[in-house]
Image 1 (cartoon, one colour):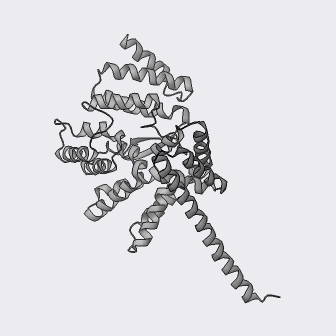
Image 2 (cartoon, one colour; image 1 turned 60 degrees about the horizontal axis):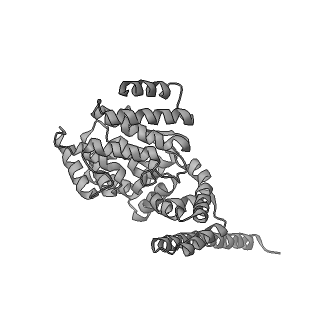
Image 3 (tube, helix red, strand yellow; image 1 turned 120 degrees about the horizontal axis):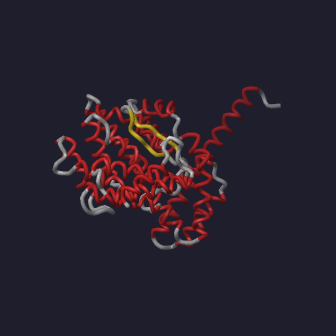
Length: 343
């Protein structure tokens, strides 16, 4: 018979071994994804597909799948998916597997606040682990909690918050675009800086708008001009209004260059009462909601912009047909008014 102390020792050893085994499995999945990504980049699509199938053969958990989903940008997943039906089916399976974990963890504000507090720890490893967990589990929802730090009286705090947002990458782009509406020029300027550093083309029309020669706040205008230099040449050309219309059209088409088709939760962001607010929508109307937001922003800049009004009518009608509007929004009525106004 095993003594009590020996039993506890055995349990402890088994726990450690199981922990090592789990870490090893996670590392193997990450390695396989990296190899698959590299193979697709090199045009070796069949070999890349085999690697993705190997991932599924490991029976990953929903948490594993979510981590893998977030490990590379959605444009990389889209490139894998368009290589054929077999490729699309495997990618779709990974994305669907990630959904339960993504829905459970994404918007848990209490958990986000607790992890953000650890970003102030003296220990570098603790800070790094907190940031990895924030990015993997909570993504874009982290921006709302970090946002007030962009106007901190401490330059170190501001710089750290900007760096953490930058590390979130494309996940931070849509909430940061909405944060540009903040009353604080410092927050707006710093958000523009981060958007330029991330380099996502969805931010380009907004950066152009704030960097226009006539924009009245010098601090914001200068930050936008630096961000545009960081961004380089993007998808859109012309002045800010032309770029915004092009972005709205791309959203309306569901262009995978600007619409992530592999999200766990389809969230649109608004800025209200000094805070970023998230609203979950259905997959069918997600791209339409993004287009709607851009078009309303454009019409706020140029109320008489005819092409924007016509496109907004189409967007609202499409939402009504998809059943993605609330009774209060009455998009079909709004669309009819717009359409009549434009003839």
